[in-house]
Length: 444
Ligand code: GUN
Ligand code: ZN
Image 1: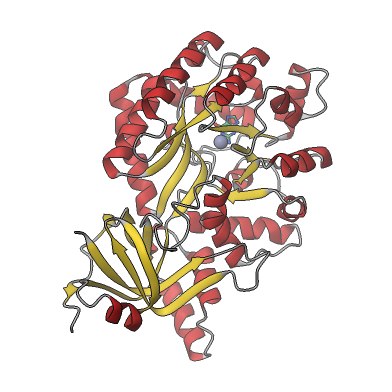
Image 2: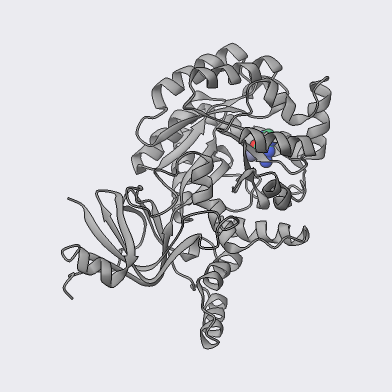
């Protein structure tokens, strides 16, 4: 039987910090008990050690042990094109993105990039993501099969797009329907895989294809839906001219049956009051992608407004328009965007939106997102101070008795990245990191 006791600074959320004052648990000298890939218990280390005296101890003292991140919007097929100069969304798609996605018609190529992608996520402490692939079925097969090798919980689906894109990247409504059907039958609910019906966005699908996507979700209600919404002004204008008679951008998706409580809408930077209201009422999920919105000059997402309408907002990288795989970097840029909006988010809220909040939005909180008993042991070990600047900051705060959990996390959010990841675990198995600290005898 696989049984382990991990010692370190154990932190996880129990509720939204916007709704509860006591939203988290933090054990500075904590213990996390894992049996057969599932969490048994978390608590003070000494209490855990006396309760589980025969469990081997892996000592990460002084390091943060926290649930793995959930990245709710990322394009695996754009792993090679981060940081392409100078364009806003629609030109960026034409000039860099579509040409990069062409190569994913090859299974070998797609597997290669899928492996790079999964390793990059794990190195950054991301243990679950909702990923876009490309129009090619093989790209989906490649990603699900590589993620399965690591036993990583992943949400993904074939991109449906049948117009306004190069010939080499378009399908038809009929073809996409049969491709999706086969992929759902093969992958959805198999192991840790979830299928996401993925019409790219309203511009690259005909109304007929969007309606087909909506019908597929009705037929397969366990699937998710993901698409892009209101990212860029030029995009919005184009959608409204392609869909005359619709009230707004969200109305296009809603009429196609794509506004559900399992729908993830990337961006949502320029929503109207009606759109906020409908998202809140319908339980639609926002994936806020700060590094992408800044990089493409898309605009400043209004977190306060999204909260006011009770919308479930999650954080996401949106690689390759996003400029980093790191959720710490993503949280840091989310903070800066809200600073410009006059709404300084707390680091606890940011952590929630990358872990438990995302898990709840995706109806996966019975499995991932925190360390309650029975949850899957997807967790990360993080060094608070790997760079000289982080070390100086730590010493400074310690000397003033302000080395609090909020300041520790906020330092990671502002200055951290993949260099801070010590180890990443999926279902209790270490999948990234150097050799773990020596297993010590429990009696020591
Ligand atoms: N809108 C439609 N496709 C995309 C994409 O690939 N990236 C981003 N950021 N926005 C999109
Ligand atoms: Zn995107």
